[in-house]
Amino acid sequence: MNIIAVDDEQLALADLQDVCEGFPEVSQFHAFSNPADALVHAAANKTDLAFLDIEMPVMSGLELARRLNQIDANIRIVFVTGFKEYAYDAFGVNAIGYVLKPFSEEMIRKELLKAADIGGTAPKIHVQTFGYFDVFVQNKPVYFSGSKAKELLALLVDRHGGSVSTENAISMLWPHREYDESVQSLFRKVLKSLRVSLAKAGISDILIDVRNQRSVDTEKFTCDLYALLQKEPAAIENYTGEYMHGYSWAQNTKEHIDAIIGGNSHADRH
Image (tube, rainbow, N blue to C red):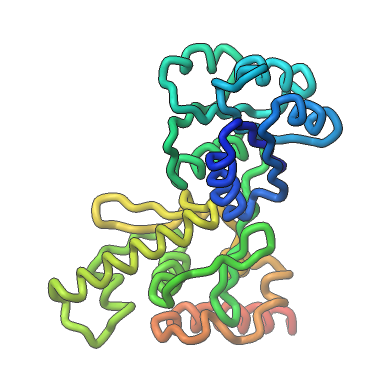
């Protein structure tokens, strides 16, 4: 996604750039303190999303939005301002969002996801389970700050959309720990770490958390395991006998995969 931001406050621009460049779906970010320079850039370069301040000297953000829409009606507009009273006017120029300063990373992330969905450019997510477990967004690996947070997501992927309770998850992640307040507190920290990692990657919506039950939305990503279970030839070919290496609880699924592979090979011989 190609983004421009226009604000006469340099600090606000710098903060917005730091936040946006942390998301993998952002391929280019250009900051402007002069609206005229932003218009010149947009006329010569494809722009998907514009973050605009409203109160600026010479040209207001509302006027800038109108001119950007004249250049390309597909540019999505999000206003980032310290003034609530402009909200009605903002949506009069087809803005998709209105963020009040001081903004948070989560507020900007929501606008990015909204813009990506409107523009049909939602991030491509692929989950790899053969060999080691990994998650890729736009072909780039997602970083997890903790190994247990990554393992929790792996467990949810293994369940193929089925829900996992806190107690069940703890029994898998810490099989030798007693189910007490201490380990429950540890689980909550792991779950929070997972949410943060997914948010930074811009893919929070793959995690479903409802009433002490967690699962993944299997329609949000592709997965080699799911493709194999559908008996897709390419997935079967890519399986080399290793599944979620390092996770003992994955053994049952591995045996199921091996049975599918064995059955497929038997059918080939006949």
